[in-house]
Length: 256
Image (tube, rainbow, N blue to C red; front, side):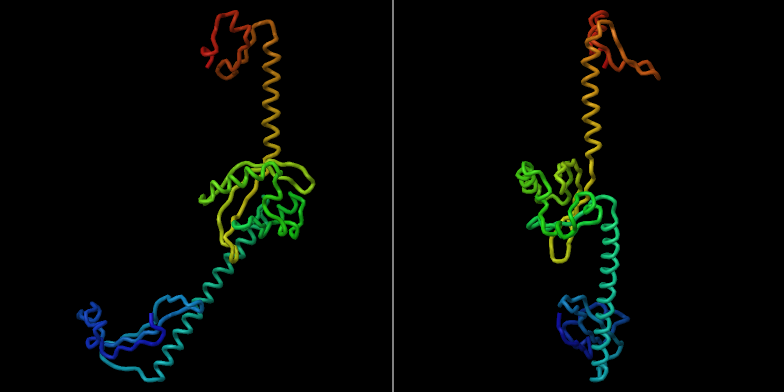
């Protein structure tokens, strides 16, 4: 796209326009003038154009006015774009900083923390300044780091990553977490936005339940009488000990 004003006094006499439908149709135009709309970063958006239905020309004053108008259009568009970006950034900052879950942004190239929210500072015990001096591998148990690096290498092309891992807090406590990541542009960095959910309590409940079930099975198998557990609503047998199976010659398949 040309960087200067383009003036076609008579479109029928210009080979670039002579076959254009807007020139050859019944409602043809015979005059064209256009100024390219180029952003401050050098990106060409299009052009600001004027037309007329009779051949004519533009005076120097009119040309200057058209060029000035094009500059005003670019200025308005860039201000509008800047406002959209600013509003978007404010919304992101609010959702990020006030999110109840720990969240952070890290550089995909060197795994450096770029930002953390308040919940991460509180939950992990590091100050924001400490976080920004660290890499995401620094909060993982040392034995998990090679596994995690292999995982990142194998999933480098994945847009979204999710999974369950263990993290180490500043006080040394190991916690179980579930993470969800999304790629974002953060300043000039290719980054990942990470949302963390602490599932330590949930994991402990699962372990306690498994241990309780194991103890129950051991105890129930030692009871020397037939023993069943059934559901009250419909009488479905949920569990039968080996004594009952042997006494009545039942098989486990019959209860499934």
